[in-house]
Length: 509
Image (cartoon, rainbow, N blue to C red; front, side):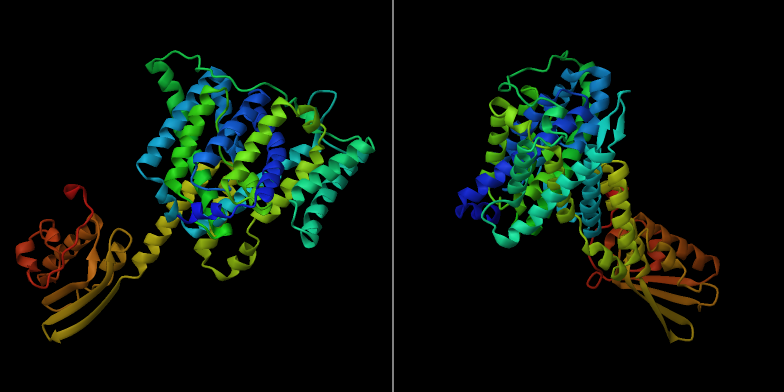
């Protein structure tokens, strides 16, 4: 297997340093998403550790980082506020079971049918979401307890440190790639801030990241139908969002690393990870595109980077919380801004001038919905719109030519697909009133796909019948005979030449 074979040439130093960089970036993200979900910071940190560790070991994409994510947190907050955190743990366990079922049924492969414009929209929308999330770091709580924008010296210091971080990450790879530039930038800015006592917001100002080892805990909810009714809808949504984000991130990393991950294996790995984190007091999670990009850009290509990131994070929780809390938020914000720059498909601006307008519309649609709603809705909308556009374009391509074999006979040759999208174009190609008494429609180079195709043929036969003209249909599949009115009189059956294919209608389902 391609994705597993890359593990044979592991650069242990790069993998460990990349894992350390990711772990440092995971801390504020996990804490922030915990607040979004309405839970304690340790709930998000435990999820980042457990989901990250288990998917790194058993998932289908070496080098991909998983943990607590904002896409899931925005769904969880309503469940937590209305029913309490124990119901969240129950929903996370059920979410994991659903994901395992999806993987066992081998449904993960369907991520490959998502159109490229939807992928571009997903990547760009997610990059903008990550960018907008970082803007909250430029806010502080005022005397009234509300978040307000920084100003004056405080803002200048924050912006300066962010730009310094980004500059180091930009310039260092030009000199050496021996050490991940993100890690160097974080350590340098942290040392600068603490050495000169620069007054700026740090991780410790957000929340304490210290705690013990996660403990086994069965969700304290009644085992009843009523409980299932509460958590099941949330579990379905969480499972769907988690798998979509994970599989699309997997596809993105496949493209970057020129390797192939395994979608169904990732579904099962994510499922086991969420079941485990639900029983150990975590909020659940999925793949994280930002941290995955940090890992890949820092040289992480194998499972060791994900495993080390999870273990470093646990070490921070158990032993190094005081050091981690000293890291300036500005340094981590600068790293995430560079992730945004690397994630966004800047070629979209050039490409959108040359591609079809419909593809450009899909890219903008998916990006916009990702920003204002969530990833699952955005991808679903993008796939539906793409399918409708495809049906419309395919429908326009039905080609009908005609010729007169004699003064009293006209032959129509049909080429293309006859279905709901092309039915109107099909019937408008016939001049029933001016056609001669004998009309032949030859479907040798055409295919009828659905009930709309059958129905429009029936409408056409009725139109010719009303004009007192004789219609002959040639080269139809035997399945069509049963659904065409008066088929004995209008269908010319040729056992040898008639094609064999199936039509998608309810009566044959």
